[in-house]
Structure formats: C-alpha cells, structure tokens
Image (cartoon, rainbow, N blue to C red; front, side, top):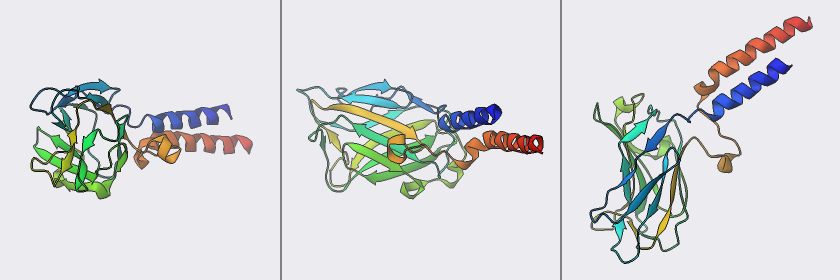
Length: 208
C-alpha cells in the first residue's frame, strides 16, 4: 500500500511539474522613448511600470531568452494581467491581446489572439491560434512577443498610460484557480501511470 501511495505522489509531482522547465526571461519593452520599465517576475512573467510625466507607450514586450518550449498547438497558455488600474490602458472595442512566437533558427512563426479585456485572465487554446506555420509544431520556440493590438488605432497599439503599473504572468496549462487542478497533456504522466499499473498488478498477485 505504501508503494501505491508513493506512486500516486510521484504521478502528481510529474503532472504538476509538466511545464516547470519552460522559462521566458530577460523581457524587454518595445517602446521608442525608453520610458517603459519591464522587470522579470518568476520564470515566465514580468512586471510593467510607466512613470508619471511621460507619454503613453504601446503595451509591447518581448524576449529572445526562451527555453524548454516545444510548440504544441493543443497546449493551453494562460496569460494573466493583474494590478493594473481601470484607466491603465487606452484600447478600443477592436483590441486584442496577442502572443507572437517564433523559431528564429528555422524562421517559423505563430500567433495567438484573444479580445482585449484589460485586467484579467486570458486562456489561449488551439482555437485562439490566429496563424501558425505547419512546420512550427514540435519545434523549439526561441522568441515570444506579448502585446496589445488595437485595430482602430493608427499605430495599432493598445497603450499603457503614465503612472500605470501591473504584472503579466504566463502559465502553461490551466491555473488551479480556474479549474481546481492543473490538467497536463496526456503524455506527460505516461511513465508515472505505467509505474502505477505495474504496482497494481504486483499487488493483485500478492493478494492471490
């Protein structure tokens, strides 16, 4: 019985850490005036701040420092914007939170889009892939760009206002606060479940 409990614990550990090796760090702002401050938060998120007394800047942040992400179109990506005031952004009803991804070595490209809602959680699934090169699947992502895009703005950006600040958190899989438990891809727990099946079979033989 103790062995069974140990395998259950191992399965939970493996499933929970399924996406722990994906990191995105050294985020940088793509603003022309150099006023937007971006600081890494955790292994895949960042804090954003625009000081008072400057012009609004496009909400546009990217990183070339991506590790451990092999693109799977069925993989869920959750981006949460938190801590921003209600007037932190300038956006129209035709605005979108967008994630651009690339494998620069092979020049493969993909793009996710969801309607812009400001503060809150955006859950990107396969249905939200606006475009992806067919050859992108299974290749390593080396570049990520997260930004707000406003189709009604002449320059195209959702803008962040002076004095605004907040946090952007990226999670692979569905966060616990949404589903209660994180459900990884089916293959993630295969080895743990194989071990569980073996031990169950052993227990049946011992009972006989």
